[in-house]
Length: 417
Image (cartoon, rainbow, N blue to C red; front, top):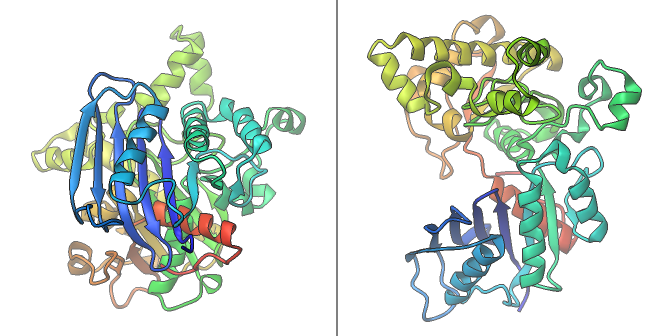
């Protein structure tokens, strides 16, 4: 049996998301999520989308509520569910396991087969990604235990941004200090920005090398990228995912002296400031909510705090659109993606309002409508707009699967959505 399937694993601090894809037609065979790992009431949700054996039920949704003490227990349970569908990790049809790894530094510029040296480098990057890389490592080492001999591929969130020129990636601090401690702008959400920029070019009927796109990945975490001819030339997140846009719980751009002030004047510890900026700032810090749907509901009821939070959020987005327009010189499209970007017409409308001078204008009806494409990708710009505005649902799992499969088979990944 030819190995044409890829299992994609996204291991978080207390969860594991997984999808099994058949790469001949890029269809999903199974998807699942294990939540609350380490708690008494852990939950595994598994859906079989295409059976791999006569006993499996296509479209069946199964749940298990029990204690999964660690990631190994969670992954073993997921493997059991896949095996019950005839899609087990020992299947000869499985070509590789692709892992999302958040931080790859500046050294990993492409998907990479995991070996001891790669694992060691991911561990060395833990200080600049303490919330993400440890969980990613656990997912990889557990998968190695469960499937010895199967290729394990690391696909890094930072890879797409390694094409940034030095003048975009460097901070203006002492070069020796920066190099010694790896202080530079890395960027994140790279698999999403890569997928969405290519899919946007397809919507325009052009090759990615011909298109300049500003991608707005707006979720609880949010980032912007300037993509010139398929290559990232700037992005809003930096050394960590804290820099850039106002996010659900993160502050985004901030005067660095705010940290000194809070330490010296407020008597806060560095860890307390870290928690403040990452977990108690952004939308939740401004108005107590980080769910855009709830914020919009409060605005409709006349809530001034919610309105101010929304206005600050939009103002930051507009600043980055303008900045990246200047960086690119010519913009063919602005693309909205991720939870808020895909599902909040008011955010899209407000973000582009007043930018008619830049050639951007939203068609109200198109902005509210669902897209005709199977994946929901669509243009929402008015007919007379010089620059296209698009909604492009991201598909990070498919992007990881494509890159993983291309690496283990020696084929180029597909360049369209």
